[in-house]
Image 1 (cartoon, rainbow, N blue to C red):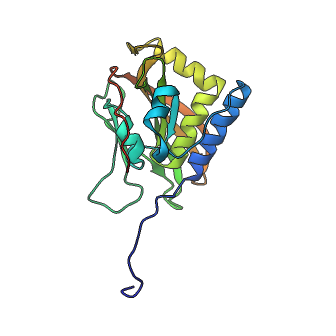
Image 2 (image 1 turned 60 degrees about the vertical axis):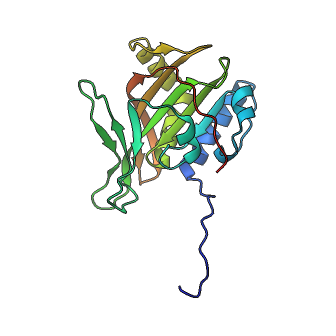
Length: 216
């Protein structure tokens, strides 16, 4: 190893759940007669945020570009620094309501250790300009990201979200829509096959504009 030379990190990793989530979104937009511009989140520019509605895939703990944009809400992705376990990430609920947990983590099969249950956040917020919005779909694992996309692209999922929003005192954004975080539970089979997703709860947050991403 000492003779191998310098080691460099190339940030080119994309999970299969992220790719499936992107495919679902592209298919949904195609049915609506729209053609999205697809690019790496690291390449999102100020111009993109000012001129377009933007959808980002991935959690703030794994994707620095998402971490720069998402405002502070009740739900936060957290990595446990004291362990090297790749499954140690969790979603922390800083203001749990009745029936809610303070932390949500992946659930694994005790024998195979494959993921059986994942969690994700669906975030809708105002963009840097009043007429645009930013949506972020991110799971603890990429299966969570896929499950979040399944929820927002299915008729049943959209109806579930819409119904829940009528019961939450969400803050209207400047422009259109509401700003909120939706916690999603994702059912997984064989550690990677997403079977279904379910809305757990919705928390509103204010209209703080996202920071403009800086170059890595």
